[in-house]
Length: 284
Image (cartoon, rainbow, N blue to C red; front, side, top):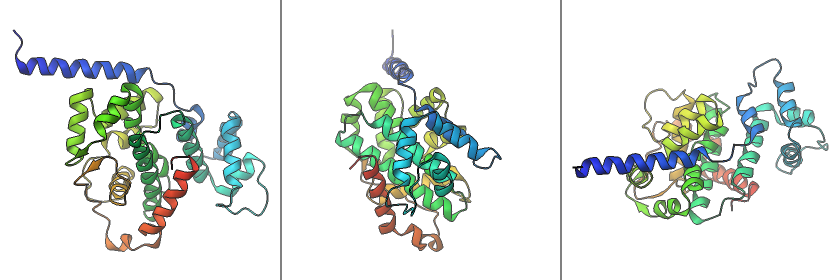
């Protein structure tokens, strides 16, 4: 005879298995974006590697050139080639742009429910903040990590359907309560789902760590990309781009006053940058 505890465990295991199967059927992530994520900007062949990646993807190249010629970057001369865009913008900026464009490709056909708009806004906000904090710490490559840190939520939404958005659209006491609900209803949290799709999509290991652990507490030295993404995630919540509706948001602690007062981390400046990014992928 099964005990209530055993029945609950079996139900959770069945839910986990069903969601795991659904996650495994998600369409592949943008191949050129994956290639860009895995390219080193430090290698001697970096410029040629980036150029080859874009040459294999005319649609991504067209969007790259469109952005490179926008008023935001203020080029005096028309940028008409991939090599010119790479030289003018820099490899890390091009990687960020390429990943943002690819991200927009992936979410373009996702129903724009209120919940998904919240999730997309939080992801873009975290990316912008992570990039700004990273530059202050001499770690310039954090934009992509911030952008994809919450892809587990998108994956669950695409796998489970609107029931996921319906359940997660309510108000929670804190993030822990919302994660407990995910576990109870769907057999796994969005962090666990993120780790699974990282393996499926062959994301770099560093991105998998960010996606799987972005709600863990931050302590000690901040010269660690994963910790900075966690701080950026918390700051996005506090700046009005919350991951979920919660009464209590995690403290964006461990940023000393000397950093909080840096002009590039001023809330108004960051909000303006976030708004531009949201508009660039049609998320507003």
